[in-house]
Structure formats: C-alpha cells, structure tokens
Length: 307
Image (tube, rainbow, N blue to C red; front, top):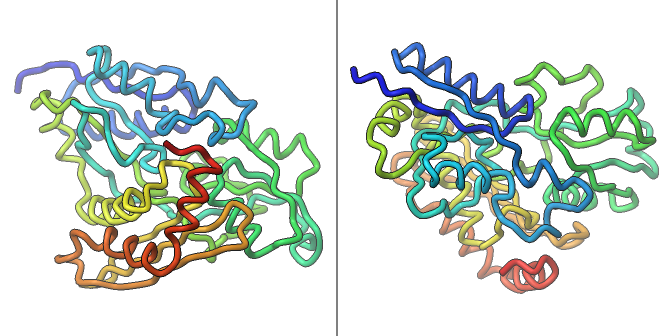
C-alpha cells in the first residue's frame, strides 16, 4: 500500500477532536497513516449572535471546506447535522459512520417542577426552541451558543431551569450528567447522532480509505432525512426535524416543520420498504408542502432571510 499521509481536518472543540480521533483510529487499524489538523470555525468564533442571524449555511463546515479546497487537509470529519445538504463543488461525502444516540435531552438542575409551571430553558437551535414552545407555550427559551463545553458552563452560570443538548455529543466526551431528561417526543435534526467524513472528489486514495468506514444503514437513513430537509429548502436553521429508522425490512420515517414560535406544526409519519426508499424523504416533504406547509416555509424564508 502506498503510504500517503491522510490529513484529517477538524474543528478544534473537544467533541470535534474526539470525532476526528475516532476516524483516525479506525484508519490506523486499516493500516493508513494520518495526521490531524485542527482549525477554528466561524461558528465557533462568533458567539454573540443566534446562528440564523449569521445568514450562512454550513457555518461550522465552511472553514474546513476552504482548507480542503486549498489542499491543506485531505478529508474532514463533521457532525453530520451541521453539514449543508449541498456540498461545495469538488467535495463529496465519503462515509457515514455507525450512528450514535439520535435523541435530544434536557439537562436540568435536579428539579423538574418548572415543567408544570413557568420555566426558562436555553437552546440556540430554532428546531428545539419551536418544539419546546409547542409543548410548553408559557415557557421562555433563551439563546445558547458555543461548543458543548461552553454551553454546559453557561447553563451552570445562569439561572435557567435547563438547556437542550444532543445526547450523542455529551455521551461521546463523557459530559452527560445524571440530571437529564430524554426528550423522546422531540424530533431530532436530520442526521443527528451521525458523523460524516468528506473528501475531495478527485482524491481516489482518501476516498477509497474512508469508504471502508461507511455504515450502510446510517448512510441510507441520514440520506432520507437530509433529502426531506433539502426538499423543504430549510437550510441548516429552519425548525425542521426528521428521523428515519430501520425496523427489520421496513424504514419508519417521521418529519416535522414548525413556525418559529412553535404554534404552527406540520408533521408526517410514514413507512416504506428499506431497500426501495431512495426518494422517500423527497416524497414525504412534497406531501407535507402539498398539505399546507408551503405557506409556512415561505413565511420562514422571509423571517430568516434564507436566500
């Protein structure tokens, strides 16, 4: 085997580095040589504005995209839910790793009485905020930005009742506390809990190496969820949730779209044969749009200025 060193690009947060090291270890086990190169993303640098106000899709991936296109790194490892559904020209999806926990969780301060009364929780995600307000319309949701360590610290420093996190991120770096509540009623972000590795389209060596890490079930389920997102044209910020799960030979799908205040909800729940579900995400999104979601999507685009 020709021993080219595969340069792995990653954000420099603890979670991102954990993900990059996971890919590095798997490639080492297959006999490949690698080097990790960490960069700080714009999304990590600008913490005083809500994500949607920054008006950039892929704010956590753009810096690594540029590094790849300049030849500074060969592959990049991302939390798949942060990756725009359209990759830059010249960059391709090379592998989706086996998926972790897809749930959102509420990290709270040991007392859940506020769920029956007025409360304040924190999240920087419009999807989480809308679903929370849909279920708890009298609550307040504060904006919360930063990597998981920063967000956990902010939760401790503020008098909020709790904050919403992706279970997978906290589990990966052993930050998940005892005081958490599984939000099994909340539909996760498309591809939540999945890690994706991207490579340059013309780099056959890196693509061949990374392809060996691909998990077919995770690849198909995340493809359908992201197809649903792309068909709704949600960008990375609109309040859209989607979850596809393999159940024997069947694929079960649930997708949701909310208004920003959580008052308006459009949802769809359908199943198809796992081996013949290539356009299923698109079909579900089109059905949702046909059944009244189109005007909400248009309102959201003007509210969020999604071009």
